[in-house]
Amino acid sequence: MIFESHAHYDDEAFDADREEILKECRKQGVDTIVNVSASLDSIRSTLALTERHTFIYGAVGIHPDEVGELNEEAFAWLRKQCSYPKVVAVGEIGLDYYWNKEKHEVQKYWFRRQMELAKEQELPMIIHSREAAADTLEEVSKAHSPGLRGVIHCFSYSPEIAKEYLNMGYYIGIGGVVTFKNAKKLKEVVKMLPLNRILLETDCPYLAPEPNRGKRNSSLYLPYVAEAIARVKGIEAEEVVRVTNKNARALYFKE
Picture 1: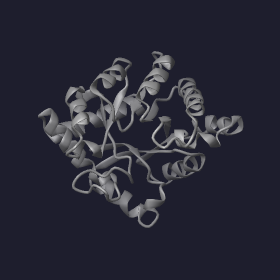
Picture 2 (picture 1 turned 120 degrees about the horizontal axis):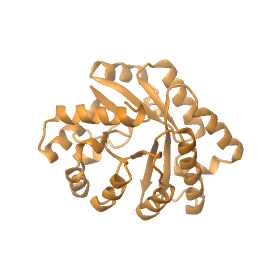
Picture 3 (picture 1 turned 90 degrees about the horizontal axis):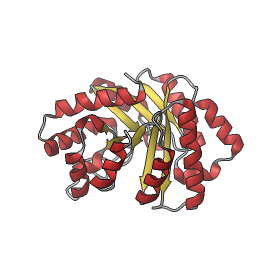
């Protein structure tokens, strides 16, 4: 059974057929989905999804591109949502210097505050980092403590940086990009990673794997990701699915 560790089924891209897609996911062996929020509104829609579907769990947090909507009142509300039934993580949080929608210091401030929140609530973190390798690693390293854990979602950096996160006990999220022909660096990372530190993810509706690159992504395409990882590591795809499911359950459910 497949564990989808990072999806956005509350996104408007699924408005026309959300229930049908989710039903098909169950039918095709996706037994658990973590739906990840990025804004205050998406926290509400994520929690609504967890109420409607037994196999969907939620992550609550504010994406670096959306931290401008945070203030102390909103942050207090976010803290309360961490206690909501079926919330299993704080995320996605982090730094994004690609779009530069928010000032870097503002992003860092709310990243620190949300890492503190994860520690306080004893929840794992889902960390987003784009074009911000050094600063993200610095902030995570400064916040590091034995009780703080999480996944570096949609990992896009070097094997050396991946090792730094492994040394702190983090998981690495691998999605559709690993199937791309030009993803040589990510394939080097996957080759180096211990299988027990990898999580399968889509980031759907974004980043669909080959042969569906450019189309709307969904958890139905996760077998392509598992097969690509299996080819790089010289193992069976079924082993990738089995171990990554176990990894995700260890992170989110402490199983």
